[in-house]
Length: 276
Ligand SMILES: [Fe+2]
Image (cartoon, rainbow, N blue to C red; front, top):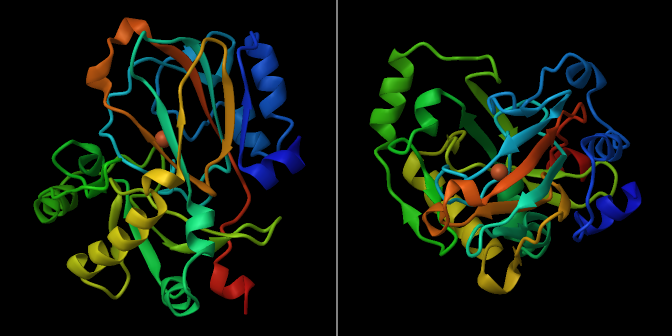
């Protein structure tokens, strides 16, 4: 099963009822941070609702975060490799989840462009103000940048106490990474937390990121997950970008799922070092 996930990046088990114990047993077969899981110190701990007796499983309904292509928790030193969603109740319309291969997009780049992108280090900030609607730097599934007042968000974040419970206030990762198992390249990027590439202005950084993101998320590269009850989806968060869809399309009571970011200890490997 691990070989299948590392090869295909996404596994779908369609319409198969699972008990919470089945979910946890399956997910913890994969490499993970046993101490964090045993202590309940989950990297998605910001999600308060949990399945009673199974704290690994966050319970989610309508997603109210902005629609944006991203990878989860790249503001951590070791972002999760494995994410999972188990759908319990599906709205009559809407609520799809979109996936695009960051790895395929990066591997398809021209050699000179790839060499340049491999030289970049990406600064993400997890200041709480950056998660607010007014403080983002993001791209929506249609490929349209939303220009937010980032500079004032930075000023407010710098002037405010930072809640570091769920990660450091800022982290620098290589933009282009390499999977230590398969050797495939990918990227690490979360637009809402993205600040800049080290050594580049915000405007330059935005232009670089936009070109990469728009290529990766072209409609022909996107898999749209149309959920059915009891679908169980597991994916490699470091290899794929994902996005929610517009939550105004459905009502909160129509949707219920379990969401897991599996805590991880596998270090981030820069592609430039691994390929040298
Ligand atoms: Fe996500």
